[in-house]
Image (cartoon, rainbow, N blue to C red; front, side, top):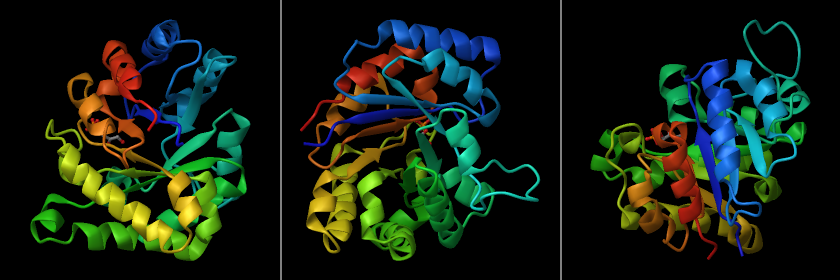
Length: 252
Ligand code: 13P
């Protein structure tokens, strides 16, 4: 049985005061033993403060990106060891905004994945096609390519301590979510790709859906067989919405 997982990707939002309020409200609303594992991923500069606030709670902390290098002259970068040091458990790698806006390619994403694991962080590997790629019928091919880059570099065993998030680019921040059937089709494809290398690891792998998840559509999307929760952008900044999304994630 895969424990459902809901992670909030705050992206570049928030202030110290807003974050403190958001986490306080979240901790008040989260049941003592939530069905789903819950994590929040604030911007780098707020991680330490968030870690202190989340201490002794059931909510985990994640970062939104990580440097592929471990230490040295890499101005502006943040290493996996630093993320671990401030209390992160997870780190998002390969988010489509990083791929598109900061030109992170498959090879770099795979190296970031490895860097994260080398410090005991669990990577949340994002994959997903653009609208253009979907319309050309290339969805499975794109997702396979993104996944294979990581599997080839890190090896199949690395997927024992990783999470995959399917985030179709056309659904991110657009209000236009993938239908449950569309999500299920790609999630099943991802699981099959992993199963081709190791069936047991594939069966245990958590695959999240991300892209315009809201309280109103979460239950339907999460009810699909291969959808194990969500990676939530905009709706993770509204505590009521986020808590409803967390409550919608059921084990199956
Ligand atoms: P939205 O939920 O705002 O569409 O963003 C999804 C996302 O990119 C999460 O990483």
